[in-house]
Amino acid sequence: MSETAPSCCGGSATGSGCCGGPAAALPALVKAAYLDGDVTTLVGPVPRVRTSLVASDRRGTIKARLGVGRMQYRVAPGLYAVGEPGASAPVLVTANYKLSFDALRRELSGRHAWLLVLDTKGINVWCAAGKGTFGTDELVQRIAAVGLDQVVRHRTLILPQLGAPGITAHEVKARSGFRVEYGPVRAADLPAYLDNHHQATAAMRRVQFNITDRAIVVPVEVANGLKPALLLAAAFLVLGGLARDGYAVSRMLGTGLFAAGGIMGAFLLGAVVGPLLLPWLPGRAFALKGALLGAAGVAVWIARAGFGVSMGDWLSLSAWGLLVPSITSFVLMNFTGASTFTSLSGVMREMRFAVPLQAVAGILGVGLWVAALLFGAGRSV
Amino acid sequence: MRYLETVVTLTYEPSRCTGCQMCVKVCPHAVFDFADKRAVLADRGACMECGACARNCEAQAIQVRAGVGCAAAIITGALTGTEPSCGCSSEGGCC
View 1 (spheres, each protein chain N blue to C red):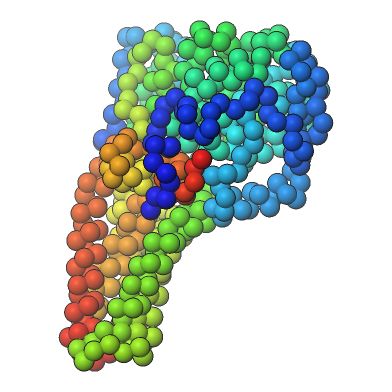
View 2 (view 1 turned 120 degrees about the horizontal axis):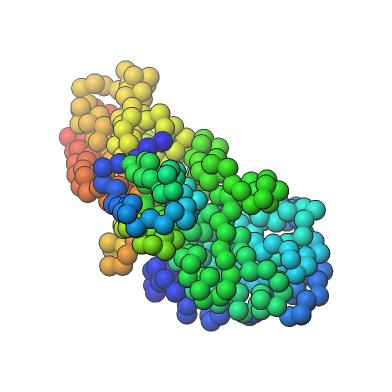
């Protein structure tokens, strides 16, 4: 699935040497819709950001959520101002993924603060922390690069809690003099946190994954999986014209088109329905949840439309009984990456069982389906 | 929602704890609680191995094999021979 150049995002903890050298100390003062003049500081002008989103921000959000240009949706790293911050205004640290930046600034209307934007290569805080780009080295270097010690008198940074997997707070303190304070998980809780003497409630520290959260990440899952799914569907479409007595385009448009639809249906079952129904699908392993969902999908299809299908055509029925669950299982297994609660050890455990089974079921399914084309009784599905 | 709990690699040595509560603050799944001036492992099975607690424990009382619980990253890592890492794996043109 990867189209990326090698060596770039292979998990380099330092994050150096990736995207054309270090960014400038201060963000370029380009005219962007989210900027609103600048404020004067000892280290020179610092761009001020708006705290309300405009139409172009919203269009950008929609595009990123659909997976369009998502990796390029970034702001320049560096220091920004909110309102008229002075030497005692709080410093809030975030990533240079524009959705992260927008989520933060829109919560700060009527406040005075500094925003320190780290160069996370356009990745959100949590994922960047996992990769180490939202990390101790980058934070310490960015503090020095913008001259933060001359901009503020205090020595406290407020980081999003989900930055913690990449940051070692005591090391930041030792290397920069700044004390790291972990704020709430969600930017939306930041006003309450700031107003409550920088105390987060237990709820503010918990990550959720409710149906709305899951629905938001579904379009990107679909966009990521669409190309391989379409290729697989196209292969079934073309193969569908095969039969004992040769190849026929009419059969391709019948059996082949039906099969391509089946493949795409299985993909969407795993990429859309699976994530939405996640807590209600039996089991804990995503691969198991996906396989059961696929099996249920086949059962429903047979029950509804299947009496039009000859039950005697057991070859193609068993083919689909294997193909659909193997696809939904694989697709939903890949949703572990979008979820907020799966561990590396857990995913490796489930993959050890699931991937061989998915492969065997998939290969057997294809074999049975082709056999049904060649030797099936009457019309094949 | 709960995930596979028995394979979690998190370990905690209470005797080393200095009571700074950093682990309680950084954990997104309330794995740690605080009682009697020390952190308590309250819900080990909810651990997603993000590594935030171990990284921020100055007393080194916590250990975990940190990583991303992401099948696509594990597949990419297996194919390229690198550690599983998420982010750019399936979208092209990271830089």
